[in-house]
Amino acid sequence: MSFARPLILILLGAVAAWWWWRLRRPRPAGRYSDLRQLVTVAGPRHWVGELPAWLRTVALTAWIIGAAGPELGDATSETTREGIAIVLAVDVSTSMLAEDFAPDSRLDVAKERSAAFVRGRKYDRIGLVTFAGEALTRVPITVDYAVVEQAIRSMQTGELEDGTAIGTAIATAANRLRKAPGASRVVILLTDGVNNRGRVDPRTAAAAAAELGIKIYAIGVGTEGEARLPIGRGPEGQMRYEMMPVQIDEELLNDVAQSTGGRYFRATDAQALGRIYSQIDRLERAPVQVTVYTERDEWYRTPLLIGLAALALELLVAAAFVVRVP
Image (tube, rainbow, N blue to C red; front, top):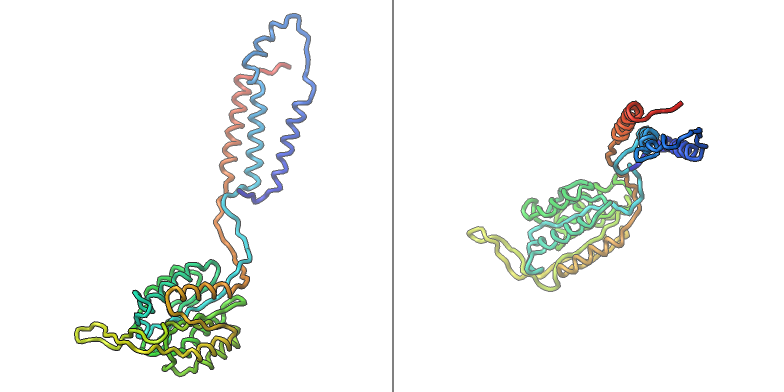
């Protein structure tokens, strides 16, 4: 509980001082020839005489608390936390269906590890770009992690023109980060191929990103040697696979990453991809101002009613049970 006007609570000290004075003041005395007349007064009902004073204290205390503006709920606050702006640029070309991350395909593993990475965010802003022969912004920069995770899990091949347009993907992701707040802005580029589509050269796109202060962490996905890759569909529509050499332009990805101050990683299995995401998480930390808004509930009515009830009861007791002797 907090108070909108806490200085009013100082008046509680006046109530306490009144009781201190009341208990220490001299008691009035009188002379009686026969003390037996006072036995009934000093008996079990003696506390009734003190009851009005206690009820008055309850009323005053409750009204002081009510006047101070008690509020339930956490305060609105601004705190500094570590956070960055991130765009995940994920390759969804047909080759991502390769089954060298058995028992799952590259795309299945990428979706699972990327979703886990998003679930680990707390104060980061994050967006999603998918690309093949062209690039598409699936989710702009946001802190709605549930939306981003849902978009990641719904990624699939065939939605975009096939191919691998790495330069277009970098340009699209960098454009999303261009006006993002914060000192640290990052593109996590995940691909399994060689740039063969798009009008934007990857190195040129990376240089433009570096000018904007954007780092690129590139991840090459695929085993060493050969992998079972889809090569088309059969007469009944089923996917046909064939063992093909794994081709990842690691030199290009390394140049793209290093030119922006980032790094290149190679993920040859699902566990390696998970470790890479964890490493990127540790590499990029930056302070961000976070404002927390919470609803406050005013609680003045309860002490106000308590005070009124105590006052009414005091008047009733004083009028019906307490006899004052002049």
